[in-house]
Length: 251
Image (cartoon, rainbow, N blue to C red; front, top):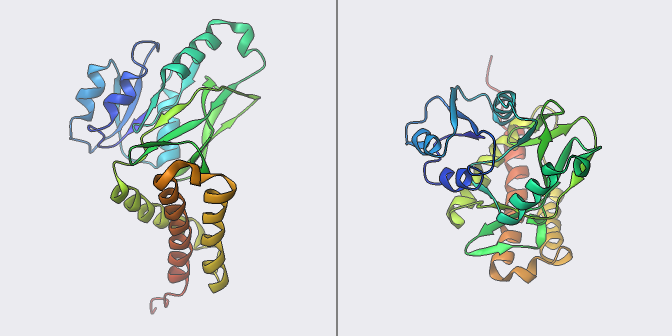
């Protein structure tokens, strides 16, 4: 695991793995002082403080400290469900069951505004998080890290639980943060979004999630998820266009 100031959330994540894993390694940002380290130690975690290097580099640093044959990556806002725990234990208790696979993925189910979201763009949201030590590494662009696996990836059925946001305000704040990351990654190779794409991209994102991926079955929360996703799409491309059209600083 990696973490910043997560004293309010990390206990649930650690509790979900503390009783059945061989070790817990937590790479903690070196400036954290909210008590996250004390909570982690109470659950038996080994703490390693490091300067923030970005999601990908930080996760690779945490994975490099693993000593067990299999590694499970977990975020502070997640928890392993009892069903997923049992499925992983059965898998790793039988060497034949994992033969030929270097990693396993499983669906991630997000809790949003009092409801588990099981449709739309947020589900099944499969995550590859369980791998043989030395057979995978984190790659991708911050904040969207992705596990790059050397060999074959198998599929598990039970859910990883994701407590994505405390409330709607929290989700909107995350949208602003991710828009900044998007601009950083694309401003050097993109001239900015056209007016047509600013109109069509968000509309398609809403229709895809709410209609074609059955987001409407998740009640008003499903409608909100689809609306927020459309807003995020608009915001990212509008911010990119804004950035690309800023006048250059005088020399």
